[in-house]
Image (cartoon, rainbow over all chains, first blue to last red; front, side, top):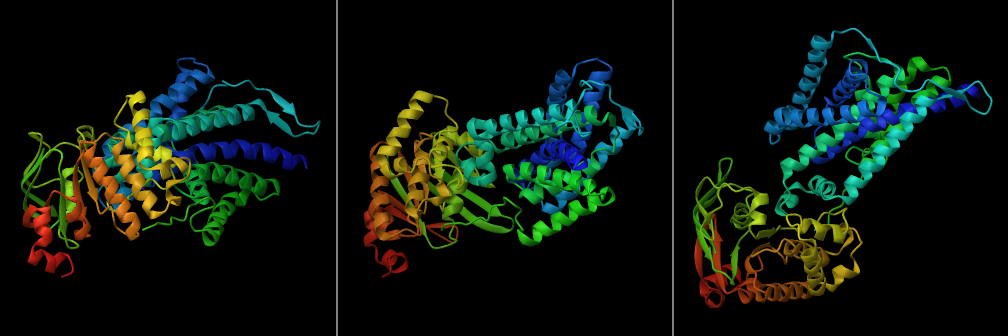
Length: 294
Length: 234
């Protein structure tokens, strides 16, 4: 029982991280139909930026988080301009290969600059643990930070997408980019903003993970990036609430598998769940089946 | 107001428009009719900047539009209602209209224009908060036109507004098109329903295999034997 509660707490944190990264995947896919495989690496770079800011500049958690989000959003826009924009009209396979190349470039580029070894994140969050219901299961204050930051960011995202002009333009472009263009919406700018927002969320996830697990390395983005992609697909790629649902769903699934003693198999289970979901609902849990009226 | 001079447009190796020249004067309703695949939609897409012409000139009030981006063209006062309506299906009617006003920042005036659109299309007001994808075909066409009007166009390009609609609804749409024109908006109407289009328009161009085949007064074309045989069902 205690084990279960403990793993549920962990599931919330893990799910938050997956959800944050998955949001970027799904937003970019929604708008240009590209699986941005470099997205997990933006998360890694976010963690490194957070590391540099807290270690060398001795910034606190929140300033580091916000600055890291700003810098990763710029990185996202640059990547889009340099790597993806020139091939926007070419085949999807070309775009996919480019995304993989960008991913490898970021991983091994970072390895060159920051060295391959694991770095220890300084303790930027209070190290306090609360026992839950007088059991030996503990709630780390850091878990609360992760959850609160994630929920806050999601609420802000929700506001941006549904209430602001930029957000509405993003939705319009993702629904029908030609029609959006005919309304005078600048497609290039809108795509750029989408990358900025998605990358900022990944950067935030990087800082959260760095300060939670205290260790980061240049390849830390590979597996969570892949898992977040799985989460986005499970929820229904291109659908924003789907990414959040998929993220938490995957987070809980993995930690529950661990709770029942199968931690060795948690990755296998994650992918098995993906296959299962795709067999039953090919468009994902919240995926929309597009029906057109003519 | 708008002048196309010897415009040539290619899709890869396909020569879609061949030396197309046409002219629209301020205040007119001009219709461009022709068979499927003749180049009607391509003409509109070129005017609104989505396709680019390889050669020839596109002049709008004396300004060359050839290298102006689609979003800038909307700001200059040309708005294109695409074929098949293309409303943003999972956005509400209201949000669709807001997207129409995307290039504008004058909130007070936008609100007034919104009310004007609702007075033209009362049914849109009833369905203001409904998802656009749940509207009927006729309502979607009204939304598409209303959305375009919110960009405050001086020239409105309409691509097949009658497509897939019941005859009664088609009549309604055409009468609204005339009203919009009376309010001072110049209209270029692309139609397969040549009969309706010629009755509504001042002048007409007939396009065939990417080339302008005939042009003239709409009424005269309506009575022309060869046009009757080819486009008006004998």
